[in-house]
Length: 287
Ligand SMILES: [Zn+2]
Picture (spheres, rainbow, N blue to C red):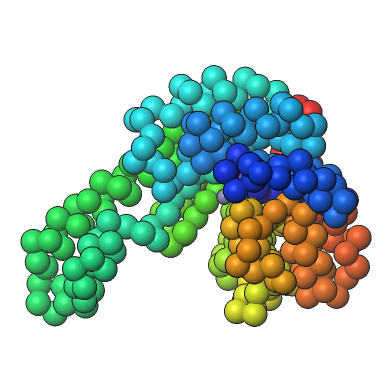
């Protein structure tokens, strides 16, 4: 028995064969699926799916790369949605500095990033860094709101963090001991994993552990304490080997688990039991 802790079942990628996707998950031993909202509308759809299928639970939130489309207040709509009993956590929320406006500008204009250091900033670059600042502070504001809401509702949080490690931890710091987070799609070092584990948070691993160039993540998954991590696919993205590049689906959680079990030299059953118990404790189904 496995729990898929991070799927985006509401995405159009699953519209044509939804029932088959769920059936294949069950056949692969994936008995529960967490479907994760990325906007208010997506969170609404996540709840609808969770109400319809008993194996699916919903996590509701606004993804950091969707903050531009979100209003200034996400607490009011999320608080309303969280009244639904199928909602088991807040997220995914966090910080994502991977595609900042300045990077887009540099790419569009073929501006060399180091040019600014050598020659002083151009007006365009100054403009881009102002936009970066505004984008980052909007992400931070919505992240803080969602952490506050999670504390208010006594829910844990699914964290999305990309190229923003220090800022993410700084924003979470005041909430230490009031909530737990899972750093989903973990791709950091063992030291970083232990840093958040020491704060009573968890990490979770995707199909990246099966990739040829995923050796460092696989290594972390092999060495991290059992009971401190969960498994996920982040479908429709990140399909594990041998499906890499194709649409991913919750059934492949098994491939992620198998890969980690073999890296640790333990039976799949042992890994499945530990990650399932960890997920049950973290998400507190049927609260
Ligand atoms: Zn996701």
